[in-house]
Length: 68
Image (cartoon, rainbow, N blue to C red):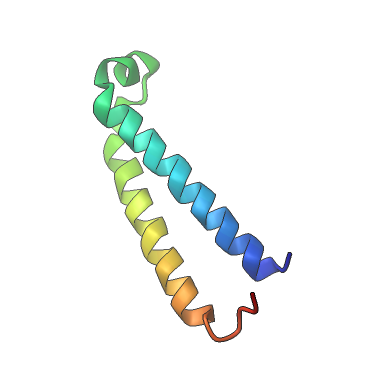
């Protein structure tokens, strides 16, 4: 696996984990508050969007050079 492929796989897992964290805080606010993670809700959502935008930008930029 090349470094480009690893970067894409890492981005996908980072986006999934961050989205799951945001969904947990969104749908279970009592548990998130008890765990002390409630203030991170907005940051997790913004980070998920930023990672998604970076992932799309990276794929568009590297589309010509990625060999499948």
